[in-house]
Length: 534
Ligand code: GLN
Image 1 (cartoon, rainbow, N blue to C red):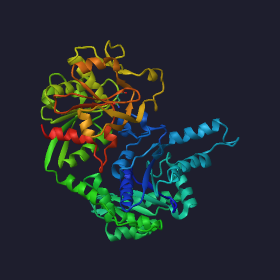
Image 2: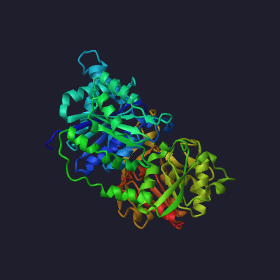
Image 3: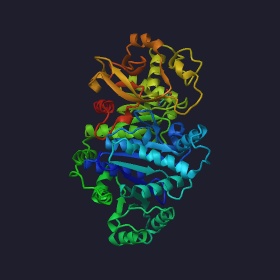
Image 4: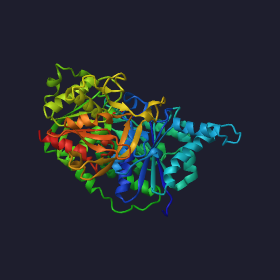
């Protein structure tokens, strides 16, 4: 690639949760739509080495990449917007930075020097930022810095940004995302918190080039002028970011505000090819004008926090649009389901998805929901733990193995239809020790799975410890369950399905991670179709 890679940093001010991930993904989308190659990286200031060991209530879903990295859910947005896979290099935490520096120290790589935040930690941060640029695959690397400017934890990251801005000159710029609160009593948007937040950045030696201002009301010329004057940015670099009814609208809002044009100008680049967002607009058009609606139940145990199942919810949006339908998700806590209320609670649903998860809580409710879906021929889709529960349900209620369970939930079960692999048994560490990332799945001829994918082989992402126990294969096949997806290298069961049912599919992997606006996942598309036909 001839020109240097351009580095764009996105920092946050005033409050957290302003949507840095969506703004980053939207800018990336606009640059991509002008013919540039872009990737996005997230730097997370917490001490966990990765979010894999975090409870979903803490940080939402853990997103998994092809190369098996357990990452922040923002990477899911990056992939859904750009349709380009991310990798381990796209998410870095403070824990990982320190782990790497401490390992180097133990190996003696610092030659007796005192190891310090500056330069050792900041150098490691800078390396991690530049790794993606060095692949030569991207003209732009957009790096989102987690947290809010002023947090103690994010200081070394801001310092690394300052140094890179100095070293890279015109190849680098900073976008600061901030909030203009609206005071209803005076009917005004207030700029003071933004001024303070930029002052804080300046104290750290970083002058932002663009300010993206979240606001509930339009930002008029006077306010733009005022912000520009107090924060040393051009007036046209004060960008308005109004609340959007869907995240997929944000690239268009940013286009209207010319965020991409300002960024390209600042970095001394041509506008690229004509901006082409036709497909994206087509998607939004359908999203806003559904011709039908379908109610699908999502049975899980982290339903109080919708972010826990972010990728599943988004995959349903993509799949719905394919059918010009709106999928209305009903979030149902698996613990709330009992023998007596299951019919009442599920009878309105046209489809039932049993979600991934860990641990015993809520398992009985999941099994009850699956029994209901199987017996009443309601389309059922089980993902990871959801597939394992379908296997357990079938063992108990069809094969007559009353004690059947997963070894995870009942280590003493006499029928461990879901079991841990020998290789996993002696692992005592929790972090990064699961079957993670993309594995091949062979699709058996003549099965529903083969028909849905339209191919004989696929790659899907995994995140689990337990597996279908192959000692029971014969029992299942004889009783009519079809094992339609197999990992050819290890012989592990990847997909189970039931014929004589409109749609009964359980998958050991996570198809939701691979659904994007441009490529909705075929399993979700087919599941929604089956639900629409009920
Ligand atoms: N707890 C199960 C396992 O470890 C399923 C994991 C999941 O649903 N992601 O195998």
